[in-house]
Length: 108
Image 1 (cartoon, helix red, strand yellow):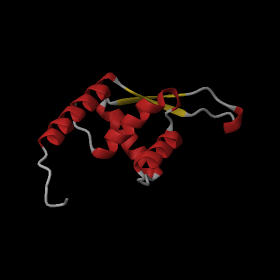
Image 2 (cartoon, rainbow, N blue to C red):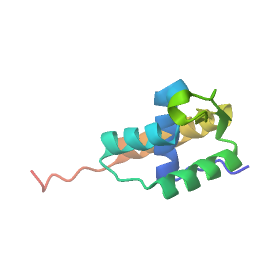
Image 3 (cartoon, rainbow, N blue to C red):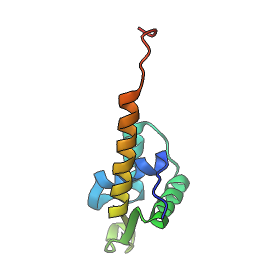
């Protein structure tokens, strides 16, 4: 199983974790855009979510049908145990690099 995360995958998994039981495509897209200022197309989001599920980092299930959605449910996403491990590994690697970063004094 692949354990590496791309940048967008990392942001999507973090968003799913933040949204908990309300993590569906529109809410994930809105959170990403509001927190990062990055425009994420639905196509890119669906592709990344599919890839995260294939890697075993996320799972999905259908919610109960609602009248507002014409009797359809939402596909809700959850970060899996493997996804949490991948996030922890990515965070640890980033923190090591940030701590070793040599800040330039010439910009002051």
